[in-house]
Image (cartoon, helix red, strand yellow):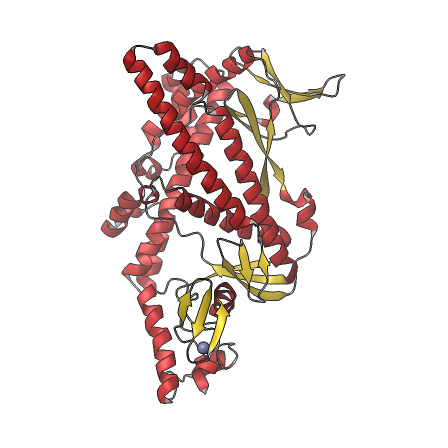
Length: 471
Ligand SMILES: [Zn+2]
């Protein structure tokens, strides 16, 4: 498993930066061309490999008009094809959910899954309709990146201990030397991202070499609930990543204040421009409305939040061989719904980081990650299964007469879902509610359990939630 590392350029010569930015701009055209020709679902369905695309371009001379070196455009074609494939793969996740909702017949599901996997959705009207719905035609928006193959770059340390990375420029045999702020030389394929006068060098290292990957995982099964104030709460009642809420709310306040200030400055600049004072308008735009500082602050904040969340997951894996969590890979339906709301954006992003950390850390340290259906886990009492009254961070169960801490209660419910015989990962919300209500109704009227096949009975007997079924 690979982990991305980033090295930054330090006090780079503006001329060199401009040359790299120009190269990235031309490679942006290459990306646009790839998306234009192969970005539709029909293009992907054609099953072309990046090598075939390269051969076609070489044959018809497409590559000539971009005026970049051969290795540069070839690597860019490969990267853009990988982006397109990722776009399709993301759509397939949604289509798989649609299949599950459409039919419960195993044979029919299997048939559609197989067709989808083999990119044969065109043969089935339902599948092609779903793919068209979820796989919107993408466009290239990347005009600031250069991909450098592993054998195309080298780095040296000068007499003063400074590390220089040499990458190909626009002309043959003329390398561009970038001074780096780190002491560790980047390895493998590099992705250079040019942002605000600084070059970010993204590269991947093997996770098994990282110290944290050597830490053994624990031996228990632990349920976790993803929170906002804490990154995670586990089924033992322990909170992890407790500074997350503070980090997010201070960032949200800062962003709101900054956006307000910038809006004001922008209106001052516009008024000045209308008055004919273009010098003033320009001054404000150049000095007060720049993006360099803003982007760096954002990157620093992201790094802090990531550390908080990854540390939290490591703490859980310290005691868990199996981590049971809500399925966090579900995507928001459309980016539009998030709008400009700062809090919702931050929450959506944090959810993604938590999902990434759970997968990443589990894989590196050898614990299993079990995604479960988390519907109503925050609203029902883990002891009796009844719907409780939620107020703030507490859940009051009127039957047990107990007030639980809501996130601890949810984490325990999530732990129990892993062994739940009736509630599967994709069981719809309303069905889950019905199942939960039936269980407590049966409880109340002392009716025997309806389904008493031996297998189910045994699973229930071994199940931590059995008290809700068999009293
Ligand atoms: Zn209860």
